[in-house]
Image 1: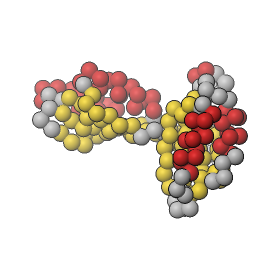
Image 2: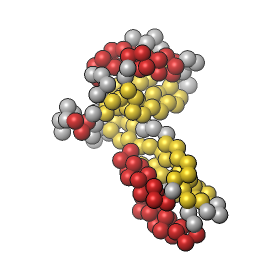
Image 3: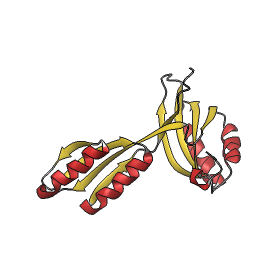
Image 4: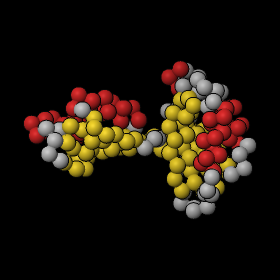
Length: 169
């Protein structure tokens, strides 16, 4: 695998920051000021309430990865920055979507959902609310598959990721 290949245009950074108000705004402001493009951003506290973890997918067409890391490292509340190399991380994303689902098309929709590993969250007279958790490309594909049904409302979380476990660990 060549991580300089255009296929790997997006890189995932895991940034541990102090869990204080304004930290996310400072990180977002840094990206905006420098013209860095964020493809995806997910933030949540860690198991240690003093810290939060930002999973940032960066578009490397907007700037070199080294520059993004240097600028992030200058922020006072940043504790640690790690790059998760493409192909060496497990990435997941959650999608919740409401689609048009007339009663005569529901079986077809549920069949697609079962194949993708999703769940039905709610059923209305002519709509269904569905969820899917999976790798971003699978979520993208499922979203495309739903378009003919008529997407009424859609929300995606952004990627969360962890490094692949070392078998020797």
